[in-house]
Length: 385
Image (cartoon, rainbow, N blue to C red; front, side, top):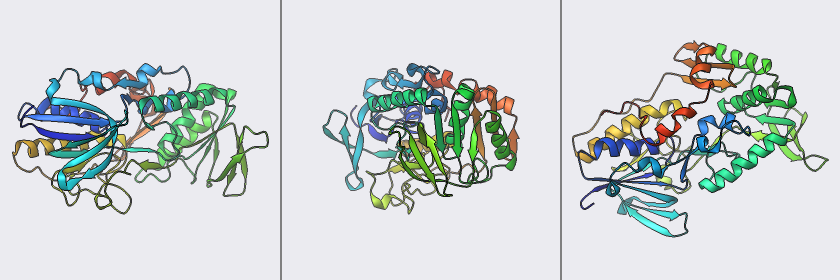
C-alpha cells in the first residue's frame, strides 16, 4: 500500500493482538494504514486457563493454543502483515526495528509508530506463559503435563494469584491421590497484593485447606537440590526445614521481556518508562502497553483499559485529529480467583465477590469458550471509538 502509515506492534499477546485488531477495524478506514504484528509465536496461548490446563486431559491443545494468522484473514492483505520472529534492536533515530525471524534471517522494518507489547514471562521459565516459539512452548507444556501426571508430591512456591490457583486446581482434581503443598512468604495467600481485602485472603486460605492443600507459612525456598534417590527434589527452606517433592513449581515473580529495549527507554525497575499518554518518555512515536511497561499493575484485568486508551491515542496520532487526554490508570482493585470449579473468590473495588458468582463467571471453563473470538477480534471491549 503506497503512502500508508506503518504501525509495528512487537508482541501478539493479551495487549498487542487486540490492539492490532482495533487499529485495523477502526483506524484503517480513516487513513491509509498498515499494521505489522511481530511475535515468535504462531499461536495465541490462552494462558488464563493454564492453571487448570497443566493437568493432562482437562483442556485440549486446540483450545489452549489458537492460530493467530487465521484471526486476521478477513482484513485486506495490504493492511496487515504477521511476522514470526522477535525484536533484537530498536533504532528510534531512524524509526526502525530489527527482527530476527524464526527462519533465522534478520529483517528491518521502518515504522511511523512503534508499540512495545512484549509482556513478561514466569521468572522460573515454567511454560504458564509463552517461552519462545509455539513449538518450544508446546513441547515444554507437554513435558510439564507429563510431570504433573506422574508426580505424587507437588510443591508450589509462591502464593500469588498463579501459585494459589495452581495449588487449588491440582488439589481439586486429584484430592488425596497427590499431595499438594503451597509455600508462602507471609501468613496468608496474596499477602503482598495491595488493597486486597483481608476477607479475600482468609477465604482463599480456608478454601485451599478444604481442598487438602498443605500450607507452609512465613518462609521461602532457599535452595533446591536432587534428593538421595536421584529423582526427587530436596527443598531447603529459609526457616531451616526441608521438603521433598516429585515436582517443584516455583511460581513467584515475573521476568520482563525487555532484553532488546534500549536502556534509555527503561525505568530503574526495567519497565518501559511511559509519559501520561503511554508514549515512551523522550519519544514522539514509540509507545508501550501491558506488563512490559509501567502503565499500571501487571494484571490482565487492567489490560482492556490500556488497549482502549492506546488505540484511541494512536488513532488520534495517525489521523492528526489532535491529542487525547492523559491515560488514567485503573485504581480499582479487580481480581478473580478460581480453585477448581467449586471454590472461588474475588474482589472489585472494596467489595468481595460471592464465590458462587466467580465460579460461574470464571471457574466453569476459564473463558476458554471465548478464546477463538478474542484471537479473531470479535470480542473487543468498547469496540467503537
